Length: 90
Image 1 (spheres, helix red, strand yellow):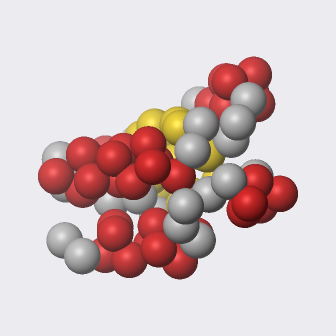
Image 2: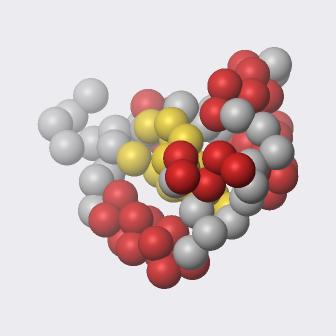
């Protein structure tokens, strides 16, 4: 493969979870600069994150990394390892 080119399937799939849309938008802007990363979605809570993971998985785009505000653990209905299990059930 030529230098500087990367196939879509080789990109690192990222999902972001945070209360704040400002934080999510800021992270997306930063991550968008790296061609090796594909932001597959963002969500304000774990429930929506699970929906994003399922849709991405159905499209054949695995979520490799979940960026989440761990201080939000009190409001999350699931733990980060639960998100991983959902993604690997495919």
